[in-house]
Length: 298
Image (cartoon, rainbow, N blue to C red; front, top):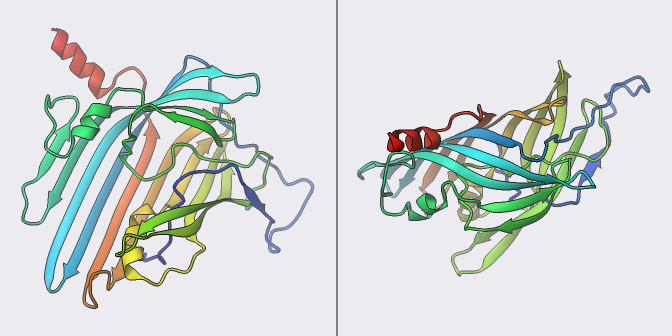
């Protein structure tokens, strides 16, 4: 289903706004409330598999082009410490990536960090970051990032923030909360324009200890320039998050986008952007890199 063009909030801030419950929601002291919080222990390793699929169809002056990309990666949080305030300090890295890119009229490009000794041109920055600490992050138990020390230029294999921010207080099904932020886009004159945005979340349901959260990015600054819209379109988030309340960690994140921009490069130009992003925990025992290391030692 086509959605209105929205912007994506790039970084979570500590400013949260818990929205009042709707008038159509019956208020009752007996309504259950839920505290959304991460639960980790020092020394724990939390891995997720991230799959990001993108198709971009463009038409400019009668010339059509299709670009497709696919990336599959393994992301690791290595929990270093839980401090006296229950803040979680973890080391973030990408252990493995398998990437593919196809553009009309060009040769396909592939890179698998577990099997390719040398990356193709343009993928050096990706290859140099694999298996190395990218950042040390301190977040509170509700997912708000308090500090982040980047060790390397960040490679992000997919859309989405590193953590999922939650309200500090217990909430009911139907409650919403949002995070204000801004997106910077570059204009033709080289001027950087700031677009005010917010990431809005809604607790849709809780079943058998699993919370379903709806998320979407909303643009607060009016955007009428198709060139700006074309930059924003790839930064959207629209989808759902499944979070295990008892275990205190995400079970699944899925974002689906289907956006159209008209007139981004001349009045007859047209762009269709389709993407799917999924992230799920994976078993800690084996990863593509560990298997490759075993084979190399034989």
